[in-house]
Each structure stands twice: as structure tokens, then as C-alpha cells.
Length: 475
Image (cartoon, rainbow, N blue to C red):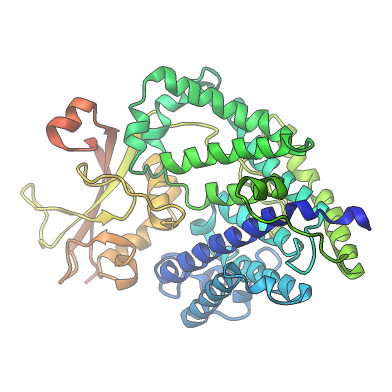
């Protein structure tokens, strides 16, 4: 079938696949280095306990068959090594079937992790990586030109990501419709970056322009992905620019990078090659019949599963970041349907004194990414995912978001658990564990230009109330 492949997208596929492999690598490394404290055998939400109560059909994962920390580590590091190999070009150096097997193994490896990750893996970009990774299985390699149908399925994925996010905003918080949400967002977003203070201090008219541009990028531009070239490439370029703007203004793990990766499916590879003075690609040999049949079957499968996200997008009660099946295929996406007007942070403190008095000295634990010390400049961590720091942001919104893991977290601080302490930037009790731990809720806001010059602080914080009363180490 001559229409089956599109040789003009060879460069787009090449960059897409290599970047996707790098995102996979970051995801597997994040899992390998953080899992012991989060979901390990002695973790806050242990996998062995989870698989006892959740059946395999609801959360398909190899860890239903066997779990140990050593096995999980080997599983995650295997994914990291395979990701690195694919990023280096291994999938283009083998036959088509072997390349597809590599991508399929990556998908199975990460699916097994996500499906036992519980609260720590409840983010939309986990499903987005899995859905993209599944489609990448059928995108082919250097032995064949890119299949047109898979390129369209990837564009359909970008459309759902962007248009779904635009709809959830337009239907949600009124500040999106009156163009004032970015008066607050840069300050109250989950994990501000080093430039977030400056974004927040932009003049308010520019914030309104930012918000209006966001609506255009998410509600209008995505339709251009389905138009002929060069319109599709222009639409893709605009989406990529808005994603890079988000990369500069905050930390959203690999959400923005995986969105950029998928958007490359709409970029005309020949035009990009001409732009960078690269040699043109000669059409490759025809695709094998078995491959064509498989791609056709997957296309029908994805279109059938699309019923649920389409119905969700059309609903007045639209839900965001939801999977309709345990394999995280053809999901619905969206973010920031509502925007916080104030930032609240849970500050965790400990003391080594035996008895609590008004004169008790409390020492603060430092987190790697979330705001703590007002004088510490916000760091850039994305695409790395600091799972504990992200959930601490949710804890500041409501204690209900932390009821299943915060107690176990405090218990591990009271014993100086090494795996838990590795998730933190600073442990004020390096020798002997604290006798008590408490948590207090602070209101944080970015300093003004004058406050920044006078104090050197990036944040100003005000104590609001006790969040967790002092908890004592068990005798």
C-alpha cells in the first residue's frame, strides 16, 4: 500500500523516538532511585500490601507475581539500560520486529511500575508516557518509512492533551475566562523554578496576554495539527513554543517534554531537514505485510477506545488526567482547572529534646524542590520527578491528600530511615534521630522587588496554624 508510509517524516520520527527514549530513561532512573522509601518493602505505601488487596486485572503488573526490593531495582535498572540503548540508536540497528520488541518491553516495564505506584504515580504524565510508548511500538525504525496511521494517532494524542487541558480551564475557574489566572499561577504552582519569581513579577497586562495566548494554543491551534502542511508544522511549532514557555516558568516533571515529543509527529521532516541543511531522505523499501496489518489493527483499536475520552471532553462534568483502562491507553488529560489564590506549605520540623516546652528548639527539614528556606532560590529539577515534593504541595492544599502516606513519612523521620532521608535535601539530625516531629502550615508568597533587594529572600512566609501536633518516637 503506497499510502501506508510517509518518507517525508523520517527526521520527525528519528528525533521523536530518541527523545522519547530519553524521557523513558529519566522515568526509570526516577523509579530506581526513589522507590525504596515510597513503595518498597519498608516504604510508606509498600507494594506487597497493595498487591494483596488489588487484583491483577485491575492493575496489571509483574509485581503481582513476585516482589522484592532487589527485583524491583533490577526491573527499573533494566528499563534504564534499555532506554539508554534505544536513545543511542539500538532500535534502528536491528530488524523491524526486534525494534518493535524493544519498545514493547519498555512499555511493559514501565506499566508494571506505574500500576503498583499508587499515590506516588497518580500523575497525568505517567499515563501520557505509557500511551506514547505504546504507539511508539508501531512507529517502525530505520528499516521502513514512518507509517501514516501511527503519525495520525500521535497527532490525535497531542490534540487530546492540549484541547482537553484548554477545555478544563475554560469550564473551570472563572479566572481563566477573565484572563487573571496567571496573577496567581506562577506563585502557587506545585514546584516553582528559578525563573518563576520573575514570571510572577511581570506586569499584569502581560499576565493577561499569557492567559489569552494559552487559550489560543490549547483551544484553537490543536485543530491545525490535522490540516495539510505547512499548517500542521506551524501548529506543532506553536505548541512546542508554549511547552518551552512552561519549561522555563516551572517544574512539571516530564509533562512538557513528552508533549513536545509527541508534537513532533506533525512536523514535516523534509522541511526541517532543509532548514538545518541536512541531506534529504530517500524513500525506504515497502513495509512488510504483517506490519501493515498490525498497524491497521492498532488504529482500529485506538479509535474504538477513543469513545471514552471524546465523551469526557464533550461532557459538562469533564474529568482530567483519567485512564479508562488499566493499560493507560487512550486517556483523557488536563491540568489546572482551578488555580489557588494562596500558597500554603507544610513545614516539617523535629527536635531532639525529651520534653516539649515553649522553649523547645525545633529544626526544619529541607526538601529538594518544594519551597522551604525563604532565602533559597527555587531550583530547576524537571524533567526529573521529585514525587515526595509534589505530594507535599497537595498536602498544603488539604490534609486529605496526605492521609495515606504522611503518617508513615513521619514514622520514618523518627527513625532516621536512610531511604527516606535520601529523598530530602537536609536532615537536621544526622547523628541521632529526633525525639519528636511536628508539621506547621505556612502561607508563602513571592517577595516584592523591594523585599528581594533588602533581604535577599525569594519568599515571605507567615505561620498560619499547626498542621500536625508533635509526634513522639515509639519507645
